[in-house]
Image (cartoon, rainbow, N blue to C red; front, top):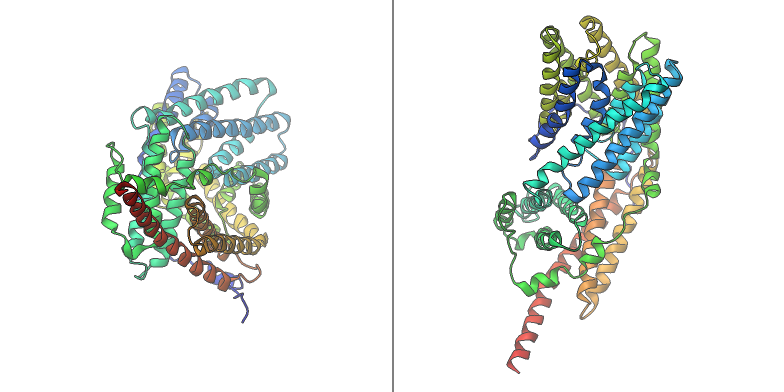
Length: 562
């Protein structure tokens, strides 16, 4: 029997369903953090410019201020580096846009540069996993700056404004460390425990257990990545070790759900949500054994950036082509702000075509609804610039507070905010703004999605093959160790975690490839077999742990008696 089933041969129409696209989810647990940080980062520069009568410069301070939206899920040591990188990336995009705008006013050239910038920003953000909000904010700012008349002499001052606001945004993002310095890593561990508890509650056989298991392993891997970014020495290392023991308990629950008490995991998660002591998991000697082999895994270096960028080439080409064509189409229709169509296209591109379709629908619904909200707000905003700034701040908060429920709901606030920002330099005709924004949204969504259909990701199948092979190799390594009479504890623990990581990557890769079309048939049977055998091996590795601990305990007791 063939090892491949034609999953990717499914018709395009079947994949482009509207079911669930607009459904609201539960809000993020920390939805208020990016919302409050955004307001805290944007308000002081805007109010200062308002007091100075130079609100027309707010575009440049907003470039730096919006960097405060990033890295809220990262420990503070890693957050400091990530935020600094985002600010530098923002300044780089703004510098390219300012330089281009000062050299030419040719709209075709400006659209082309904007599309290339969008592709670079998309690839880098996906490769470094900077997000949310990913590349969209960077592209929004750099594309808007491209279409503002510029002279070389003003570039340093405008960059200085963006840099100063970026420094303030960095400070805002780091400020919570003064109150709860271990919050992000405690929260990530709690999420892993809750996800493992949800799977354990199914006993590994209940309804939805496959999805719960995949979600559990993804949460555990995210927790390990969070702990990886913590220092290996000093005070934070003690916290890291305590949290590692809890993540191991989540791993054990995923491998042996029938032997796990989900309420115990949930109780630990509730304690971590507060500021009290980190709960202990049990016997001290057993806890020490659990982390054997963890150091080797946690200190492994990530793949080089060039290797991570390789698989993203089709997405980058989609972004460049879609953004360029959307901008050109907007120009052909006589729209004065083609960057709106460009940014709409840039916001569509997700990991596969199915997700891109969903985002296109969400973008259109959110933007059109947001335009209606703008029509209701603009008469009040024209009463004075103070109201204009306050409305923008309120919409900024609303966008970040709502976007985790569904992208379209956040767009309802983003769209009027973007339209009001265009009025910082002077009031404009609302009717024209509304018409242009609706047309550009429709053009950007339609042309951008057609570009995604045209540029197929044929590498998706290759990545699934590679992920299956990696999972098989990881399983074989663990199985060889399990076949030994007394395997080295460190080697067995490292092999178990390596297998868990490989299975998580396999599921994510298979899900991403399944959302493409026109690709070659995916090895669905091999994926299923690799997952089944891999999880059986994981369960066996977990069962070996208590046996080894019992044997070690008996040996120590015998030594004491002697």
